[in-house]
Structures are given as structure tokens and as C-alpha cells.
Length: 420
Image (cartoon, rainbow, N blue to C red):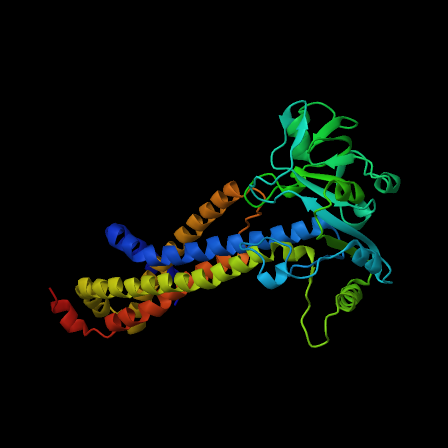
């Protein structure tokens, strides 16, 4: 076909769509829904992947977290009974890991508080103003050398302050804003569960969590490990953060795993009774749910495209019947069978292509709405999803338009001219 003929067919297709607006729109609904779903879901999954990568980079390079639980990340249920009854991780484990040749630094970590809404959070006050859902982390003085601690004002505490169990604290941005407002928090005294702590540092504001609330970093207070352990001797279980020497990350994981198995008496044929997690694994639960959602939604999207394709085929069959005389006239004045085939195929492809464009636009609007609901989620529509959505929508018109087009081309010109 020549470009001029294609252009004429497209113009005829648009004219047909204008003549039957409602029918055409109803026919396109399946294609619109299918394409919209592809765009929206791919946008969400791409954004989630970018979020996990950015959060992993923010934690710092070459880190592992050792815990008695298999997963220290986001969980939607309690750890299993076997996990809860395992031996606790100890400070002695941290000191043993510190001696490994591949390890650059180690810090035990214990915390007081809850990551979600809970009545178990500590009470943190300044002049009668109480912080919202604070979490206290106890770490060693080298913690800021192991993972990224972004301090905006002040400093981190020293090894001497750790050894003397000095009551000093580094506070998150949300804590500082709530308690101090426009005041400078550094060197001020705050009340933490009835004890007086001196603020020596304030952290930068974190990017935010998935749904726009205050992230844990902004709600945390970092204090010397020995100080928090003295205040809460009832807390026995800790986790360990370890950082590898340059180029030794893989070897460090193997050495950490082997050492922990020996220290905990795990037999060679038994699985680990502890977890060695990477920063990305903290968000693994969300990523898994998103992946399952993709596996469920994409077949539904394909079903929507199938329904749309059947609708296109039906409307084109009706169109062939309605335009039988027109087809007869075109054949009588010299139109070939292939011209008739391309005329109806072009109409079908145009119909589904318009549905695809509308679906892409609606998917883009959903992506914008998602970004409003979760500002820290970089909801980005990948180019491949747009191209795939448009290609698939056009392909639906091509595949399901073939039969009506062939039926139109096979009409006997004389019989078609007699059709009323």
C-alpha cells in the first residue's frame, strides 16, 4: 500500500469512529483497561525498584545485618516460633566478628521502641513537649564509620563517652522539630524515660517512607550501646551491623556465616539458626508483594485486552454488514480485495490504537496519583511500557480485525450492490 492510501484509510477510520462514538468507546474499554493496567503496574514496580536501590545506597556500602531472625526487614506477621526460641545474638558475637580479616568494622545494635504505632515506645520530652513514636538505638562509637549517619549539626559520640556510659544522644530530624522547633537542640538536655540526656548531634531529614510519613531515621535517638544496656538490662537480644573491607564483601558474608554457625553450634547438615541480611532485604517483603501483584495483575490486563479484541472483532463484523453496499461500490469502481482488507484492518488498528493511547494517558494519571500518595516512591513510567502498551493495543486490532477484513474482501460485488 502507498502512504497516501494508508492516510485515506486512517481518515475513513476516524470518520467511522465519529459516526459511532458510543459504540466505538464501549468497544475500546477492554483495550483501555488492559493498557492502563500495564502502564500503572509497570510504573509502580519501576518506582519501587528505584526506591529500594536508593534506600540501600543510603544505608551504606558493603553492609550485612546479623540477627537471630531470618529477616530483619518489614514483616507482616510475627516471626515463627522456631525463630523466637533461637539463642540470642550477643556482644561477644560482635567482638568475634570484629576479628575477621575481611571485616572493616562491627557494631552491636539494640533498640527500645516500636517501628509501628505502639504503646511500647519510650517517653522522650523537652520542657513538657513529648516526641511522637521515638525509637532509641544503642550502638558503639564506630557506628558512624560502619554505615552512613547523616549528621546535620553537632557530632557523633566518642569511644570515651561509650565506655563511661555517658548519657549523650544524637536525635533524628522529626524529634528535633517536635521538641525544639526553631531552637538549636545541640547541648540541650532532654528527658528519655525519666533520665536526662545531653543532645550532641542532630541528623539530617531522611527522604521519607513509602507513604509519606516520618521514616524511622527521623524518629530515632542514637545513644551509646553500654548506656542503653545499663538502662534496659532486660533486653537480651541484639543485632550486629558489619561492614566489609574494600573488595571483600562476598568473602565477608561467607566468613560471618561460617563463624556464627561455629559459635552457635549449628551442625553441618542443619540450616542457619540466624539471619545474615543485606540492606535491600529490609524491603524484601514489599518487593515480594509487588512481584506477586504483578503476576496477578498482568494476566488480568491480558484478559482485558482479549475482551477488547473480541469487541473489536464484533464491531467490525457489524460494520461489514452495515457497509456491504459501500464495499460493493468500491469493488465495482476498481478496488481490489487487498484494498478492502487493508481498509478494514486500518479501521480496527486505529480503533485499538486510540484505546491504547487513552489507556496510556490514564495510566500516567494513576502514576501521578501514586506519587502524590507516596512522595518518596519515584513512580516513573518506563519507555518500554509505553511502547509495549501501544504495540500490543495495535496488535489486538490487527489480529482481531483479520477475520472481518477477509469477510469484507470476499463479498461478491454484484450481490453487495444489491444489498439493502
